[in-house]
Length: 93
Length: 416
Ligand SMILES: Cc1cc2nc3c(=O)[nH]c(=O)nc-3n(C[C@H](O)[C@H](O)[C@H](O)COP(=O)(O)OP(=O)(O)OC[C@H]3O[C@@H](n4cnc5c(N)ncnc54)[C@H](O)[C@@H]3O)c2cc1C
Image 1 (tube, rainbow over the protein chains, first blue to last red):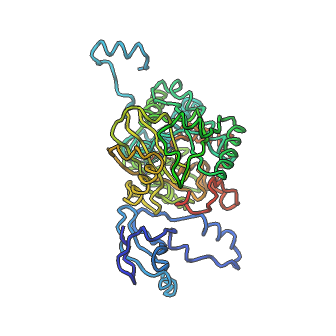
Image 2 (tube, rainbow over the protein chains, first blue to last red):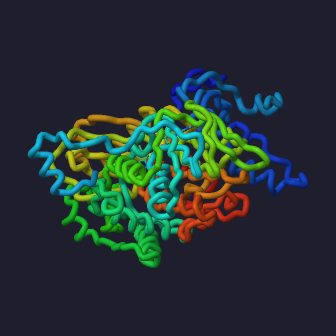
Image 3 (cartoon, rainbow over the protein chains, first blue to last red):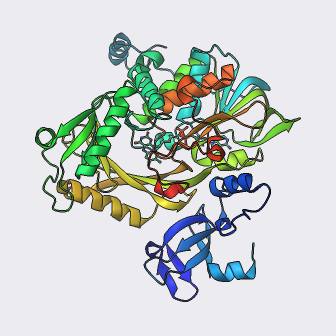
């Protein structure tokens, strides 16, 4: 699999390590009243869709940036990649 | 039709005209007491024990494809009970005992072969860890033996004992472990269930649940609505997809695991051998093929195939362990979709919906669990109480902090 890094172009997925669903960027507020339950969901539950999946990849053997990669889990086709910092700042999702 | 040596000889002498299909191909009835979703090993074993042990008569298994099309027909067939943690080891030892009597129970040759497994030791720290594991196994009534280097060398002389980076210093052996013929397990359970009245319905995909007042009423399928007092879901890699139709999110990610088989060779490998310094394991099938595998691919996948980097990684592990494998030609490689749970251990539990039960999260180790998983799931479905060896396999263990994490790596499925 080749990941289209927004700054570095197409990079071999082997240079990256995989974390999981991009929703992991959105940690619940620990001050919330239901924080314990919210953290249990955050840590353990996943949508795990068959189809388009937005997911976090870390460019460990590269520029050490975090990317949000959009990929089809039924075909492994990669549909796009953004810097996670851009996604977070933009408040997307 | 029962199988016996006499029957085999008789058929051989009379042109093999007396063999019949092993199970019926019934149309679905309007309703059943218990519907099992998923005709893999676990679904069929559940149906078998429901009928055989718990006397349930109106049971159906719904399978979207054909029997054996999922992971049960794709695995590397290793059976063992060499786990460490108290939530796991008694369950897997119970499974081992059921394996030992499987062929008598189903009257079918599933080629259960207790040829032993050896987990190799490469460092002193690893020897300590395996000694601890061996003791945990003995405490749960399993067998375990620590092998020294010289003894091991006599048993498996072809290993690379003097690899400068990963010298082999010994091994932990479970002699009762081994392999079974995966298809034979499917067929044995399917035939046994069918003989006891279970309807096995293939090409019947469950597309939704009918839930009223918090209780399940039945399932929508590609062959129409089927009513059920209880529904048990055992769909392995498709767990999240199916349970999403009941509005549930699971502590599970789906990942691809690959397997490899070489051309047929003369007998060389006595049992199952696992490399302790990388992820590689190998055994030899009765046809002579070396059957081997390694890590999952490591990213969410429903593709039933993996990519080349893992192929390279597995082969590197093989070359480091037993350089002679480089002379063998690879015949086939394939992948399956694993239901990787957040702590690497399975779930056999009720859900928040009355009458809906779940069995999944088997990761890459659910083949060995097939008999106990079926038995424990049947026990839960029939009695509404967990089987004594499966009491830890609850949904709420994650939120409560009682995870069963053999590797101690946390909620990161691609590391289990
Ligand atoms: C390459 C590989 C190697 C492995 N090696 C080992 C090993 O050495 N030892 C070991 O212990 N384990 C091993 N495993 C794991 C083991 O195979 C699985 O954990 C186990 O088979 C899963 O349970 P099952 O047999 O019920 O799954 P499956 O056979 O996958 O059964 C699930 C069934 O559900 C059906 N289904 C899905 N959705 C629906 C629906 N909506 N409606 C109706 N039916 C549906 C599927 O078609 C499928 O037939 C391996 C797996 C793989 C892929």
